[in-house]
Image (cartoon, rainbow, N blue to C red; front, top):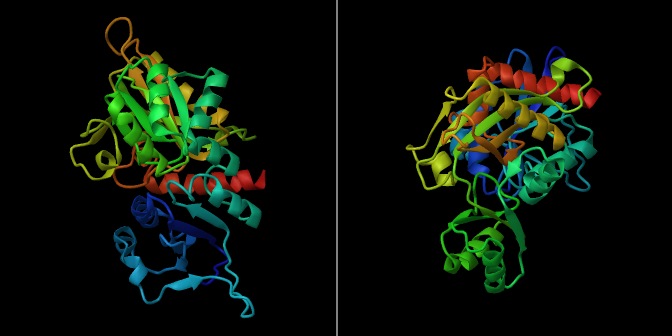
Length: 364
């Protein structure tokens, strides 16, 4: 599908995947494919179906976003059949535009690492640690990097009624609480629990996505996000992690769930411009610190809450770490590319920089 041009690097853009975020991945990939510099790179568009089948496709970005790419008659299935040999693909780098399980949890990264193929984003260990909210919170707590919400963990297979009683005692019945699958993205499987009677069902919803559930106290505050770009531990100063400007989420729903992120047009985002410079710098520095503690490479979005301070306002607010996402969305409404664009880095420049950083970490 792509004839080798010695002047160009061949980039495989992976999208779809066996994940609850399959559809979001397709939309993200469509925007990456629209903005990647075709004068600089040859692109192999590679889709993974929900059944786990891999295909090379020449479908348009629009067909990829809608899912109609799977009907393209020119799709070429990627597989090795014993006794029939195989065709070798000439690929310089993989850009995994994959969200959620099997995409950003270290599994794909481990596969690519074993194959010896450079790829955009964090490695398998960092990806897995960041994907698991309980592990992330433990690492950030150990490093004393930032305040966090009080939390506890429950495991699938427990008696949910008994677990609910323990949870209520742990939080001293301080509702509402949030129940989340430890390993899932885009707020899939999250419930806001307003009373003891709702806890068992919320645990079951979380366990449908993962074997471990995280239960957190509610933090009242502004929802802030920072985009970070760079490689932790890079020898060259220009490749070290840097933070974007700060963005804010205004959820149309009671909390920023999947519907509020992708379906509800009432949700909105904005660049934060009303905080004092010293607090802005603290938030950006903390985002980079968390990124480095987790050993991230390439990119990640770091999410916070900002509680009101002693003055009753946000100028002296208390920063509370929420979570980190190592493969954030690249859709038209996604904060990661928006924040870099607001910081002076265009979509195409951002993609180019991510590819450069991937080659840099591979060659170190």
